Length: 281
Image 1 (cartoon, helix red, strand yellow):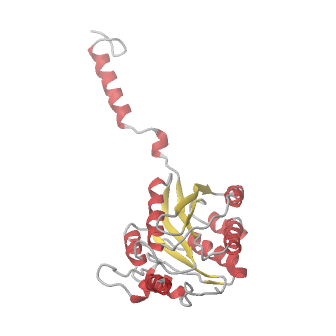
Image 2 (image 1 turned 90 degrees about the vertical axis):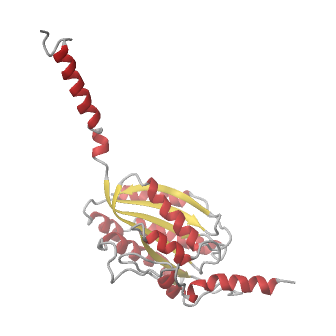
Image 3 (image 1 turned 45 degrees about the vertical axis):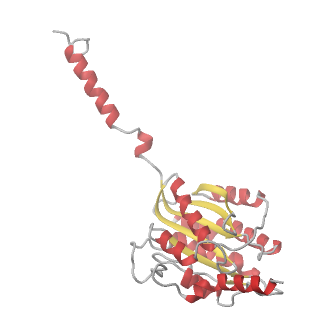
């Protein structure tokens, strides 16, 4: 009889078992997928209601916040000491684009690199305000997340209510159902000459119609000089805040738009329709 090391039956059986074991075991890289504390999509408003100065304030605010000692301390204080961040811009229903794809930030050097990429990107503007479609687009970014995240968050900024596309609360409900938290940054940086799109209670609008999920919150910004501080505080809360179980009743803000929509959540659509009527010959 041939030995197991030879080419006889015993050797063939040994080889077959070895091949089965090899195929049943995934590569080592697949077994050790990197984990981060938070995967964060920064969804930034670039609608025409934000002028160039405001866009620059917004861009500089994110760059200063992501590299700040406070944010770096929050990152280091996490279980893994790492977060994943993506930066995208949005306006109307057809205007969403990823400016910076997923980047892992675990050190000041990582943060500086992220800020450098952001600072070199051109500033652009687009028409209309489609918060709902921006939320849906942001949620899809987690499909390409290259790591495992303990918490998934969309941080959406905007200076006005939804006036195009998917209703904000409809999109919010869909995104929250996927286990994603939505936090809001309602912006009131300048007073407008016409004022038709301005909303004095924009923070209430965001609380009622936009944010959702465990621990969801808004940080209103009234004045350009407060923007960087607000962003920094918001990022620290998002990174260092607790990871709550889905459905935590004290923190979930979800309006079931399929059965009822708060009239406040239709304010942007109403204003746009009124504006169009006023411009009719």
